[in-house]
Length: 333
Image (cartoon, rainbow, N blue to C red; front, top):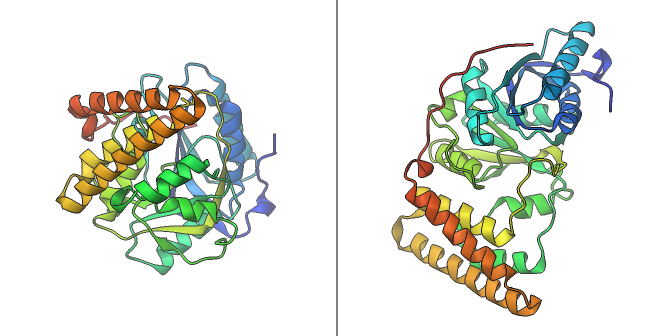
């Protein structure tokens, strides 16, 4: 375990306008490693809000220990806010609680298993400073894995219009783009996202939805009103800790997330409808070819399972609409 940052590591000073919000569940070791990199930032946030969905006290002990190390070092920030609520189901619901607890004009959302480069927050804030009208800024996942040949083929030939993921080429070329200027985007990942409170407004993550894409849902809504950018200079490593993570076949995940976003945002106009039709054609072709090549029904079953799950979400009514999360008490460590 890396030791918490000492006063000498904080070369640029505090960032009093920033709240870091981290949902977590049963990953105290990964969370502690990540929080150490938050404390070592060149610009330290005003507050770190941890929304814990665990049923044990291990995460609470981590926060208590790190908060004490900050106090002993003579620092006044970050202030740790810790909430434990195992009844929360999913990162979206937990992030909504963090939003309501935050007292800062800029919110930074992180996963509980990421390691930040030391200038991560400073680089995010630099974009807001240089581009005052920007409402949302994303950093970059520097170790994002390249997709398999089948996934890459599908992405290149069948994902058109709003289904094209503009983040992937940036992630895949993270090293070459290290010193690039911010890039306009509309899709932002929830574990590397920042937003101004003014731009977020009343928008919230969909606490009812359990598939992937709830982060893109929020960023798409914000980007309709405010410019959104991704800066390759704000970098983190995503550890991809297995604890508590559901491993779906990529076809299942693609069906659920893209159907969700289509019915939320993109079911308008002839071009988007044709893009959706082509996307589904691609899934059928890739699943069928993969099943033949692998001599296995797994890809086709993944497609069928994804379609079934997407229909469940679509027919559930509230699952395709945002749900307000009641304000939680504000205990602080």
